[in-house]
Length: 217
Image (cartoon, rainbow, N blue to C red; front, top):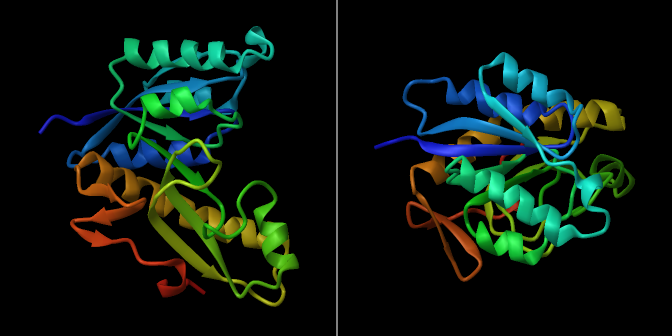
């Protein structure tokens, strides 16, 4: 089976992008990262992509002013021109229009640093500590128009320690992100993930709820 052609969208250094690139180097990995697209010309992840022989592109959102739809159309045109089949968001800090999301329905993944549906949005590690959460983690999900609300493909959890700071908790969660994002993309690229009634099924089995996870120490 031909490998799925994947684009990664970034706004910064793209550490999750780097994890996907490394995973895709395996001969038996079912996807290849063929394009890294940034909305900021000097995004650090672009150099990482180029150093790995991956084509890069920039669609600067500032050039479109407040016209989000025009910006999204420009990105879509770039993706289509590269025959992209799957899109992975990796620290892409722009809200996408419903029209763009619909064009990539169940073909666009995102990673979020929390166990959704808890702590949608920003500052997740601080909010988890403020809430005295016992368990925290990360979630890979399909993108839908509502932020951080798409069907969950995979989650990974860590125990929140009594002495955790935002930095120490973030570092452990980032390790989880770098593990589950390549694993989730692999499942999607193998066509093993289906969505039924708003919930992901992997090989016909529903993805477990976050409270069923066994967190890492």
